Image 1 (cartoon, helix red, strand yellow):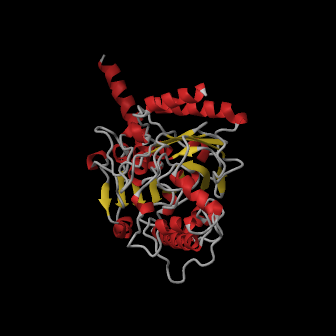
Image 2 (cartoon, rainbow, N blue to C red):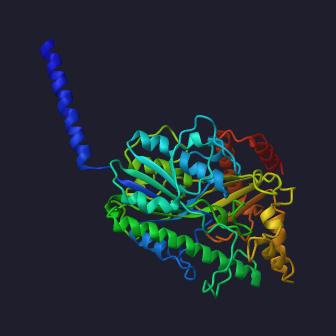
Length: 449
């Protein structure tokens, strides 16, 4: 008996020593997440925009993998950031409205990674609550160089949370000049000025990103640091932020993983912001509790080309300054996108679009007003559509990426509408969405038509 116990103790000691040597030989990677505020996917050089100046983001793209179909589940700050840090969709984690809070007991990124030996820092904009649900080490962005220059006994996960390119917008001296009109916006001088000012702020964000990448390289931390760039949602334009249109929820996502991700690669897999947390945990060797998201590592390693057959989104104006009630739900498949405006009888309204912004040189209200006064029938119609939307919208993204033609009542696509509506209902049921009953009643009316 004593001999058996001795052998067991010896075996365990040898096993533990071997594991510790293996851990020492293969240190866990540092993780740096660069998170901008209100940056649309199409507004970077690596995504095909030749006018906006984004050299740092473009360099990261050349060194990593660019995702062309990455989505945030909601187009306002607090819910998108809560989804990012919990790996759960908004109604699942509790934060479904702007300035909202997650449910009590929800676990987030710092809970998981701290237990795995990481120091987990959030530097910059927060917009998440309550604090106890997000136990980061908090610091200001100007403290980052000093932190990176210090001694690191443990691996770190550093979230660099920028304020740019969030409005108010103002045009910078020597900033962006000639601007090609965006297909999804009415073309007026005010729209052009607003776009140029936004581009100036995108470049400000890129410059700050470049400074972080500079410090990583200067301090020799870049070779063992996984680097990600993404935005919380799209810019403060009509048909973008505060909506579930592509310009509001389709976000840039770039992942650089030295020695793993093939530089200069592109993925068109459907992915969601809720996939980021399980991905980071997978990279760090952590197995979380079941989450809504899935790890992207099979795609990053070249072992898979797809992850989801559909991704989802939800939005409410509640919590947004000067806004009315306007809940929206969406489901996006490989080709189609269905949007349901559950209060389609209401006129879509919020302060940022209805009132001047005294802080800004150019604001969204002036842009919308210019559409109405332009005398252009298409611009006027576009303004009215933004304010007054139908219950159901269906877009063929393969043919209509800017969502200009609603095909919800195209008889040839009736089965597509039905199928995607049921997908959306099923997802809402899994999320305990409070508007599920209303969604099901509207579905019954559609079937009986």
